[in-house]
Amino acid sequence: QGTSLSQHAQALALLFDIAPVERRRPLVGQMLRNDIVQATPYFMFYVLRALDHTGYYQYAPDQMRRWKSMLDRGATTWLEEWENKRSWCHAWSSAPTYELSTRVLGVRPDAPGFKKAVIEPFTAGLDWAKGTVPTPHGDISVDWWQKGPRLHLNYSAPPGVAVDVRVPQGTVVVNRGPSAARKAQNRKVKQEM
View (cartoon, helix red, strand yellow):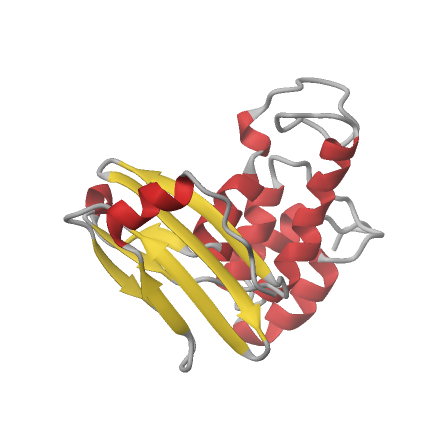
């Protein structure tokens, strides 16, 4: 047994089911400690995927907030390292782009080429989220917000793309359709909170 821990080892043990189920909770706890070797922006993709895979995604937003330091330093692209010692445009550091699209907005393919799509937002303690995910058939736009205990979700998808919306019971869902989505892009939408 080694004398140091890293987010890397904990994440891979969780993501690839190396650790038995009864060890998941302690490993997640170890992985999220600040006093162990921290993952690079590139490797944080695996940390976030491990949280999702093991059912502990509620901790992902706090991990994604680490990227805010890049924005605070004026970056307009993802940096290679937290301290910006290297590349100022590093695609392998873009885990939040994937996570915000597929988990927070909840848009992901359900068939090859996005012929079918799933919209299953994870509110992650946020009050609202809004965004657009490009697909080969056109954009899928989603905006959701919490109003009291109720989730409201508006979405639009291109014609011919079947959408399976998976939300908690009692959610108000509106399919705006492709023409409504075009209109919404041309006006400011006020978020209700």
